Image 1 (cartoon, protein in one colour):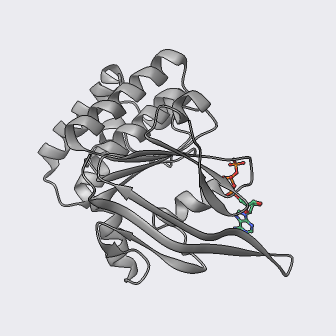
Image 2 (cartoon, rainbow, N blue to C red; image 1 turned 45 degrees about the vertical axis):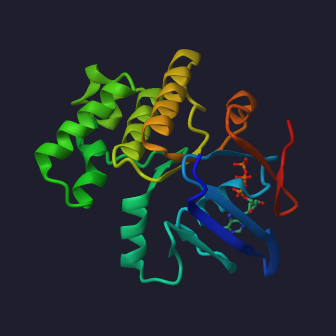
Length: 229
Ligand SMILES: Nc1ncnc2c1ncn2[C@@H]1O[C@H](COP(=O)(O)OP(=O)(O)OP(=O)(O)O)[C@@H](O)[C@H]1O
């Protein structure tokens, strides 16, 4: 594994205000994700895992500290620049898939490529290939409302991976999937990891999935702690 950093966060803190009182969710979190590294983040409900993932992914500015992706700061830049960095370098799989209801599976998966200025024919071909890889070749023209929960999740996974991002951020990626499909998704992740050196940061309550990663980090009392195995 190379030591090239893909995503780095330093001294990240997040304080929410709740009913006028400060609530510290993250304090001084630092993390260095190298190329091809697979990391899982575990922790009890409410420990701040989603907050951390959103902060790492450019969706939620930290109260303090900095996050950089591919050597570029995520929060010291304009919103436009941040969107470009996210599109080029990151892939996202969140619990609520945010698929566009009026578009079919191929169109949803092709969307990040089109936003990245890939020509439509090539975008559609790559979207189809990725949907086949997640076992959805028979659902290419279905809209989100015509898909099951697990199928929608796989469309979201295909959409996150289609740009071959340097780092994929996943919140409970296999939460709604049966064992076979969860295994397929894990295999796909492993293939991408090996073929393209894609890094993964996965938030999960699934201890088996968590322990398949290179590093397991527990979020506790606002800080990340390495889990020794
Ligand atoms: N926008 C917000 N304003 C105020 N408090 C918030 C906000 N978002 C999250 N919180 C609080 O921050 C804490 C961490 O929430 P977060 O969703 O990051 O936890 P989590 O570890 O992902 O939980 P779960 O495993 O249940 O999904 C919780 O106590 C939550 O109530």
